[in-house]
Image (cartoon, rainbow, N blue to C red; front, side, top):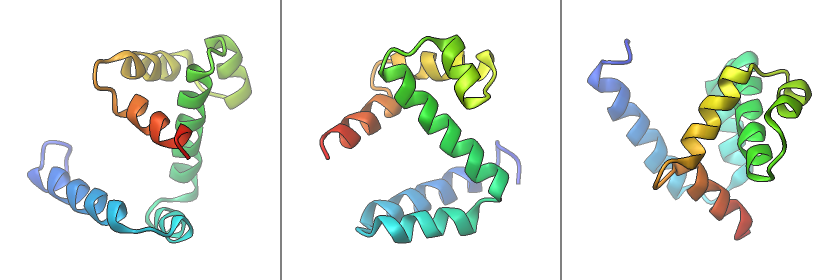
Length: 98
């Protein structure tokens, strides 16, 4: 499947809707670990850690060093976080609300 394949959006929407209905965080984590390779799991976890670090105003170079990420990935995360209606920002608000 390529990124332009309509099945990409269809399947992502289906997974997102299913995850939204699941109340069990351990089940969601287990699902993600089954779905993703160990390398993909580590990459996604690092990207979420990056977003949280940016939200805490940690300097980008320190984030790069601490997480082993490129400045390019950090800059992309920063841009996404600053967008109006950012999904990253919304997820951070959910996280903060407990």
